[in-house]
Length: 135
Image 1 (cartoon, rainbow, N blue to C red):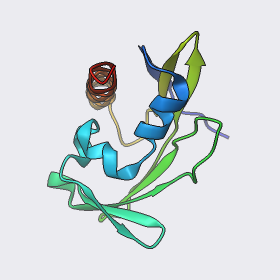
Image 2: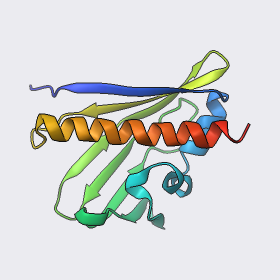
Image 3: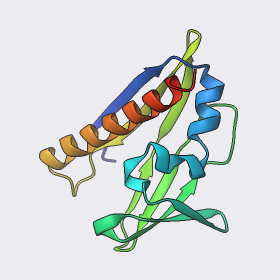
């Protein structure tokens, strides 16, 4: 059994955690804050299809709606690569903490891993800004 290096990237949001979950878990809202899906998603059965830019079309399958704050999603790319993305929203006082677990796959060198981490931080900051502006 081999484990991969991991980093939990998180941000606090000054909104009730269920409001954050309800907004962030809707695939149709993801283009508003998740830049990798900025071209939008179209529903196809249980999956959502998006344009991944230079990597081509992506197929995304989300965890079903739940009250545990789980927004895990699996991204399947045209080249056959499948990436599991653990994403959680939990209560943090009267607000929320959003946490993304980034795993360093064997095909990612340290520089690519750091670039992915920076990208996720930027997306979580966009989610925070979007939701806190709604107050």
